[in-house]
Image 1 (tube, rainbow, N blue to C red):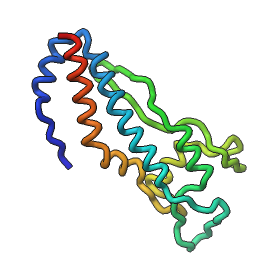
Image 2: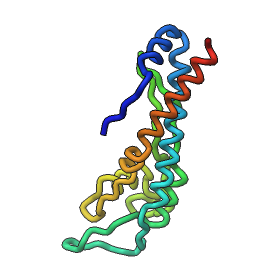
Image 3: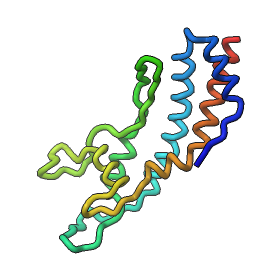
Image 4: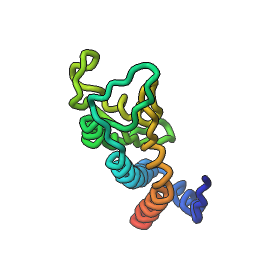
Length: 161
C-alpha cells in the first residue's frame, strides 16, 4: 500500500531552514502520529477475541484463538508511548507494552510479560492461532497518522514564521 503525500517537499525545505529546531518539530509530529496509532491499537485490543483461561491444549489439538480476560486487560493497561529518542539525525517514538499481567504461573510467578503476550497474539505460537492486531491497527490508521503528522509539522512551522 502506497501513501501519496503532497506538499512534503515544501515542508522538508522549511524544516531544513529551521535546522536548530528540527528535533522539537519532528518530535511533536511523531507524538501526534503515535497518539493516533495508539488509539487504533486500543480499539484492536478491545476487539481481540476472548478465550477461556482454563482451556488446555494438547499436542494434536487445534490451536486456540484469542487472549484470556487477564491477558487482554494487561495489554490494555500496559500499552503506552515511550519517550522520544534521538540518535544523530533520527528521532524515534515507540509504542509498546510494559510490565506483567495478572496470570501467574510457575514459569511467570509475577505474571506473564505483556510484551510476550502481544508478540504471541500477533505472530501465533505452537498452540495459539495468530491474531495480528498490531499490524491491523497500523494498516487501518496509516493514512490518519501521516495526515496528523503533516498537520503537526505545518502548525509548528507556522508558529515559527
